[in-house]
Image (cartoon, rainbow, N blue to C red; front, top):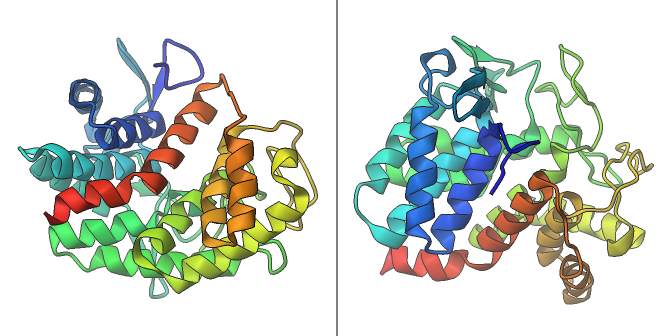
Amino acid sequence: MPIADDESTIKVEGMGWALISTAYMGDKTSFDGIYEFYKKKTTSKAGGMMGWKVSCNGFADQVSASDGDLDVGFGLIVAHWQWGGNYLNEAKKVITNCKKLIKNCNGVSVLSGGYSDSPWGGCDETDISYYTPAFFRVFAEVTDDDAWNKLANDAYTLLERSANASTGLVPDWQYADGTPGSSTGRIDYYRYDACRTPWRMALDYLWNGNEKAYAWCKKISTWADKIGASNIKDGYALNGTPKGSNHNMAFTGALAVSAMCNSQKIADNFAEQVSKLNCNFWYNKHLGNVYLCSSCIHQEVNGIKHG
């Protein structure tokens, strides 16, 4: 199960997705092994979080990337729902570390891009695809810390500031005021970070009925349906002009989850296309798996949670 660009390196985002997926699928043996590896790759450089890129023998990069650790925290909560035990305490430890990443930008809670001896980015550099409001609301519930509810709600402020009014498309990176890009020149259009955003936002409508999530997901999935599920490319200017040429699960699968906030016809169009995709690259495969697990299985597992 490679979770990086080659078999010798592992990225923290892949760790997060693997933990969410194995927990939802009830694979405790794989979950425990992956989490043990995660713990061995945490570092003080990353504020107790995992180095962004590692190998079995060491670190390729000790700086953290926020999305991976946040997903690890949620994966541990799903493990708690499934198996009980000490998983909730472990989740709280990870969530406490992740709280270091939250910054205040003129009253709006914003995620730093990661941690390198201290949080980096924030007001001048954040990634909307790192925000999963539905996860944050669960964090607030299990930690009794309303800072996570505020981050969940403020995610829509950031989303609305950056989303194109016609297409709904968002950039990979943005300033807190919505300006695309960042102070270090990160990608300012819809690419391999931003492509995950429809999945992350849609969960807040599918799980919680959030109307802001619904409105944005309906807009972007309506735009995508006009393009055609089989024609989605791996990159767009925010006005919808294609900048990529590949068709894969990372982009199409996330839009399929957002289509669950739209009409049955549009949802079916995307579901049919997703069923035909067979991606070999780790990023696309792992994302496809977590898209399906978190959007379709959550209600059953959440039923275990609520007894």
